[in-house]
Image (tube, rainbow over all chains, first blue to last red; front, side):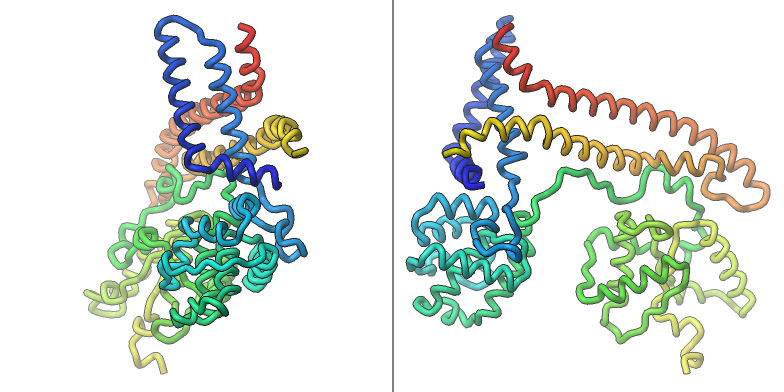
Length: 344
Length: 109
């Protein structure tokens, strides 16, 4: 891991990046020029191929190496360092140099911005590297993180030097608030901890799904398809996971669900979540690629002179939906359908 | 320093064991995405079902015939595309495996 960290640090230097880029461009240019003149430059092609082999090795092996162990299982913090922080930690002798290097990164810039600290306001005080690493390990354990990242070392430095610098105090920030910022940054910049896997994820409906499911011409007169609207902004119903799971479970069983709660408690967000997850193909079985249609009660009741008219309309919509095979109806303000008097 | 000497071994392990396995996993996910995009399993599963799940009396027979007619062409096109995708995947996988050998071979041409 240490050797990879050193290679990573060297290879990610801006000057090395420029050299790599120049080398690839000049070699490919030279090879093309030679081919155009009916020549076969063996050595440049060999070098070009070796460089490409190394680049693939670097990009898909070295740059994606994970720490040896997770923070909960280790006593030596270095074993849980992610590659970016380990590379800086091993290559820099002083803590102040590490922090200077870290402060240039986008994730730490995010933390500084949220803490209302300007980069010039950072006061550099030397601390023992072991001390900062051990403290970062404690922070990550508190936040239930997997590995120690650049953000954790950065935060650990601020908290350890707070007694001397009073920087957080001057910014009216408590330790807990700064930890929230750290948690926020870790969530937003999670690629350091969870490297992306090489996988193709297709979300949404396939080419022929519209041909298989039935018409909804009559239904669309009285209902709005929530899915297109929901897809334009990914919904977030934080704190309603339990209710969401209960709803999904009930729908899997084929039963109807009534969501009861005060206005603004998240009923509609939950439905939007369901519409998004279903469209994205994250729900299986009967909930796979379903459309959530929201009933417009006023439009549904409008123009019906008597109960017979309403019954007829209801029958045609029910017949259409039952044959559509991919529609879930969402009825907001359910009590309003039958009138306020029935709600007693 | 010892790690530096082990780097070529690490390269060989990556190139001939780890990377091929990762590429195969990637291709599996790519094929799954292809099937979802072109709805191949769904088309086969609903081959004898009416077009747009028609249920009105008098239209069902016609819908089944029309559905089968269109689906036959689409399934054929899907299969052709899938074969093309498979050929590309096999080509990429093979080239990846023999790339280091080709690199050395270039010197002896």
